[in-house]
Image 1 (tube, helix red, strand yellow):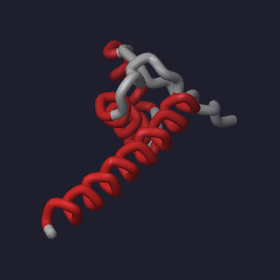
Image 2: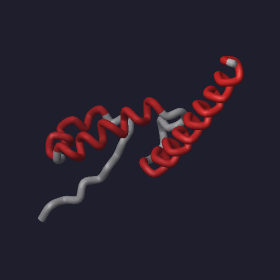
Image 3: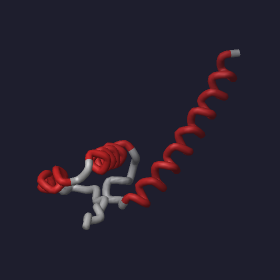
Amino acid sequence: MRKKAMFTVGKTKGVVASLMHRRPFQHMVLRRLRELKKIVPDAREADVNMLLRRTAEYICILELKVTALRRISVIYDA
């Protein structure tokens, strides 16, 4: 019988031995979630659900900023 893996992301550096027993896909997901926590503002202590929600919000904010900057550049370029 196989154990279900739990996705925990945080400041657990002593978990290297337990990561060896996880499948490579799970290890890759955990690594990417840690990297995402470094990029998204106010997401350092968030769980996975909140991290994904804040990431989606951050993407929307960045898209809005890009749109605004493009419109401003059109105004000043003329």
